[in-house]
Image (cartoon, rainbow, N blue to C red):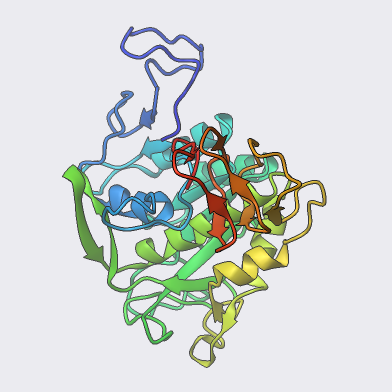
Length: 332
């Protein structure tokens, strides 16, 4: 979870003078307090798709294991509320440094407050990823669905597909207004109180796209929202079933999107090979691939450490003597 380092929990003081008292994990704009807990399961399910931890023998795995989730609540536990509160959620996210937001909500029509918030987000380089809606085949080109149908170029509108790469029966579409599709049928993810459940919806498709957007940004933090958007939309799996249904004519492909920006940061290559010439105790920049091999040996008295966010392949010729260890806090 994202935390506000400028706030001291529970002291009932606005320590960072941002207008919110005890906003340690974010803010609940529906109830006006610093406890944005999910009372519905919808937000928890979406968050799990984005960032559920992997390699821990628990439940499910998210798209981006090391994403930080800023909790912002704009609707009641029953799913109703004011668009102005949701606009304020977006402004808060931007003001506190979030570069990507997942918006698995919709309805209420056009709002000037939300339009203004989206302008503010765009001007601050923020990518707003939004569900296209579940109106059973509505064409958003002719019947807009908000917030996904605002015209700002920092919005990615997401339709849902099933396991056969067909547009889900409930999903909205739009050749000009819906950008990309992602799996949104029978999505197993986290729910409240440590549980797991399968949900359907463009709300479930959207966090797949948001998660991959976060992966791109973790790979190269200098990417603009337009570069992230283009990497996502230009590297889909094109599907005949989506021709004329979404702008990209295809379904999200994380590998293609990441590969499209691979090698763009020469200071930090995408693959780091550890061999006998490499310093044995080292930290590497998060988000890179580690290939461990080349006759390299970790002695029993040594620890080899990898920064959180990396992937690693252990080759057979990578020797770890008994007693040697990895730094488990930072190793995946």
